[in-house]
Length: 185
Figure 1 (cartoon, rainbow, N blue to C red):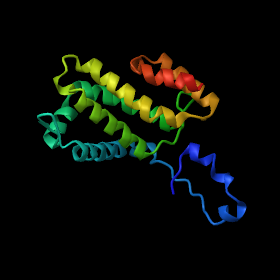
Figure 2 (figure 1 turned 90 degrees about the horizontal axis):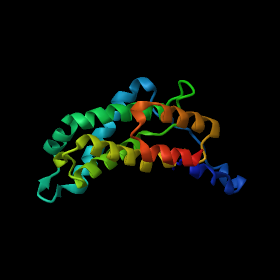
Figure 3 (figure 1 turned 30 degrees about the vertical axis):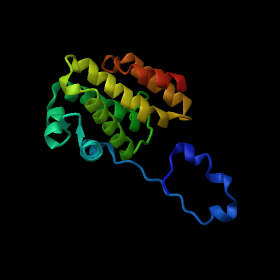
Figure 4 (figure 1 turned 180 degrees about the vertical axis):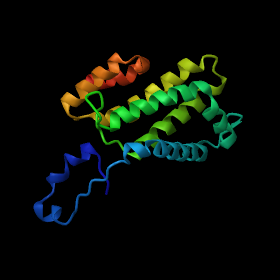
């Protein structure tokens, strides 16, 4: 079975005899040059999952046409560019401002699914102030789906990462995310 960092804490609670029967294989996320393709595929999977779960919401049919309107929305696309930058900074390890936390594609799918569901339930396409609404939605999705993966991560890396987030204007609207990360530091 697959496990995350928290599950690894319990691995050695089993006997040596039983643990010899298992092989531990680390599966790393795709390299940075494949990030765009990976996220686009994650977005497609999240969209399909949401269409299957929702079908309709009130008098709105949640289908490809509905998602076409979401994906073409300027405010969504602007927020998504910043989300991509943040996800790269979380996953990869280029310098001290990068975290190097190996979040997988499943977490990215979860982030998009959470964003899409909140956009639907919050009637994002009807919102008068989409720019503010999408920023709150994306911040909440990262806070709920990615920040918990940072529990028990290396203090020095997490602290440097927090400082870099805190000091960059493009991330100023990630309020919940920054509070969550700060609480881990």
